[in-house]
Amino acid sequence: MKLIHYYEDGRDELYNLVDDVGEQTDLAASQGQIAKSLRKKLDQWLAQTNAKIPVADSRFNATAKASQLKSSSTGQLKGLESRHANYLKPEFKPNATWWNSLIPKD
Image 1 (cartoon, rainbow, N blue to C red):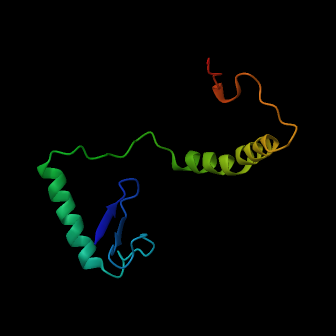
Image 2: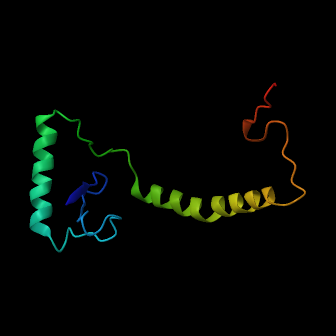
């Protein structure tokens, strides 16, 4: 079994790597006792190793982040798709510094 703990929202995911190598089926809800046991072991190990545990950022604004993600997935993404589609046109000719390309000196 593999447990993944997300500090961002506190959730845990649990996967059976023998039957689900691709980690497609989260078993945390149906195998709650195993998830709790592994989480306890994880927390103990982190404490024993003096691991730095993430803490919530008091400056984080969930509403602003959601707005930023929405903006990225609509306006910015469409612009990138359009620009990148131009790279595939037969008449496209990159300039000398396209993607900071360096011309090798042979």
